[in-house]
Image (tube, rainbow, N blue to C red; front, side):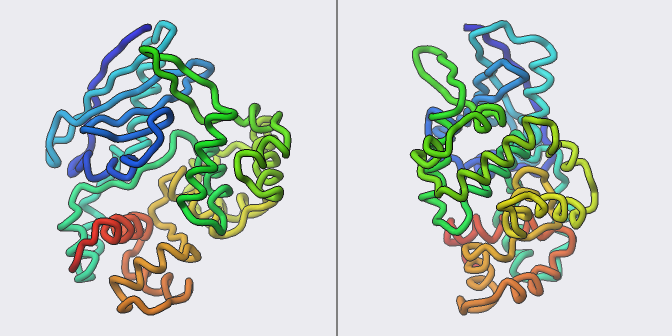
Amino acid sequence: MRLKRLTIKAVPPFDFDLSVRIFSSGDKQISNYEKGLFWQVFRIDSKLILVTMKSLGTVDQPKLSVELKSDEEISSYEKKMVKEIVSCLFNLKLELKPFYEEVKDDKIMSKLGQKLRGLKGPSTATVFEALICSITEQQISLNVAHTIERNLIKTFGDALKIDDEVYYAFPTPQRLTSASIESLRKCGLSGKKAEYIKDVSRLVADGKLDLEKLKGREDTKEIMNELCKIRGIGVWTAELTMIRGMQKQEVIPADDIGLRRHISHYYCNDRKISSQEARRIAEKWGRWKGSASFYLIVAGRLGIQV
């Protein structure tokens, strides 16, 4: 077993515990947050590295202690790549002060910003992971979707054994491309979703779809158009992928029933609202619709009142 350590600073404010608490119910063999420690396996090229991190700093002087473990030697390049992935995973470079300034005239969001100060929405290590998970979560409950995602990862993801414990990395496009429809369905996917996932994986594996390059585009409408050309991907899936995998804070997945429920709770006295009404309410958050949406979701889960 090889071990390396590094320290990563974040743009303040950043509340590590508040931001990663969403992983506290995760699978311990995939990603989890427990007793101040978060861990997950990352793939750097063909090498798997178990990354464990904890907070060393404060909300206003945030700093993470990161430990890297692998069954192979870890190079300086791989340490650098892990640092970039961790920064992406927790949006460490995101400036929250402009968000708080943008919503200062919205009494509800302004108060949530104060009560959840330093909260940053997590991302995924790759856009591919975000897209596959978004397809999986179409029109089913999150609990069911997360079970299917765990099945996919443990069935098709590569395993890393560290200190007699086995951890799993997210499957590669090549691995999902070669999977049969039947084996994907055994993970809990419908036949159509299994086909969609194979189609997307094949496009990425064959080099016909460069999701990371797509992430670099500024125009979210262009990204939306490109994603929606792919079979099985509609507006909701594209918007969720942009927020989760591309850190596009100006996007809101307003077709999401759960998100609309949180918006309704804080802005509409819990009455049922349409996606159009949700988008209208979100206009007051400017280019920070994604961050505002995450604040509403976390506030709702924590039972925060304003």
